[in-house]
Image (cartoon, rainbow over all chains, first blue to last red; front, side):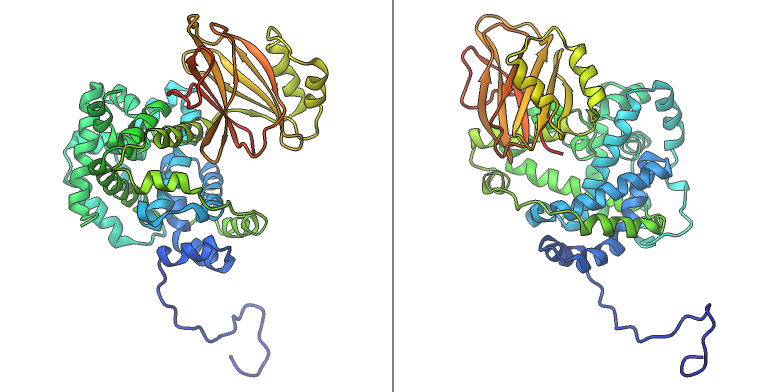
Length: 202
Length: 251
């Protein structure tokens, strides 16, 4: 089927695939900053599913999530020149950027409807139950899930609503019917616990 | 905002769960506090792990669209050194520097997610709505309004009122209308700033106590945004925080 003979249209020719070295976002980003589109393609393949997944989680509407993911990825290209490694890993930078864009998108929508806010709050309490059909980074997901389970219920709710729900901590306080100082503390303490569990920065 | 108060907000800060002014306050605080910047970096990285834990295969045409966007999009110039110094050496209190960075942050923060009117039709409606504002120069105004690339950008001002800007990048001109700004005493005045890559340059100062006005800025130069602050009467050389409104001048 490979050599000689006619291929029918549905046959995919075999070809030699070079051994793929795992390349990290940290290695690719400096190349992207110098205008290397191939490096950007590799970076896309590395991060697109996670960026889209994050946008989808926060925004929920697939069409809008796709739009925001597209904007965020283009922003990665545009501003790769401004990325400063001292401020964190390339992956962190990309997720931070995608998250901020997603939040901006939902905030403008949120302002219009209190009702939507309540509806979203009900569904966001079980964010890890939706398993995507196709996922990458299962281990990472498991690690995050494991560490999220170690939070108190109040920490878990506050962090989920703020990060995945895209709410401000004031809105989180409203939703959970808690005072602002309590919400601030739960978010910060919860993140510190997550940081230690995920062994970030050690 | 006091330092302790800003510090308790670092968790909410890394989750993007603050409003714009709180965000600036935290960034100011972090710039002066080495321990905090380490904490913020670590918590930011933790938040990113939450972000990376959700992967869903995007629609296949997204790749094509992103790559085609990339192919026709110019990358930004590298960051000017002044901002990098601010980030890299937070131990030395650099009052002026962090003011600049905080201002830039405020501008960026405010710039995202508001309404930009694009069409001529809406532009004219927006202008009519603000018809009470005085016109500094009617003919310049008209000519700016009809520039092919003219856009109207409207932003709310913290505390009340709004600032509406008609900007033409081609002409390097902008008309600024401010209406219903919060009341000020005779010792204070609203001031405009032209901001280029995070560095504010003082622009026009309104009369002390004045709450509305229109003016034409005819030399935007490389400025990418416009800021409004409240200053002592007569204006300042360095902006006094908070930034009450930030208006992006470029698309």
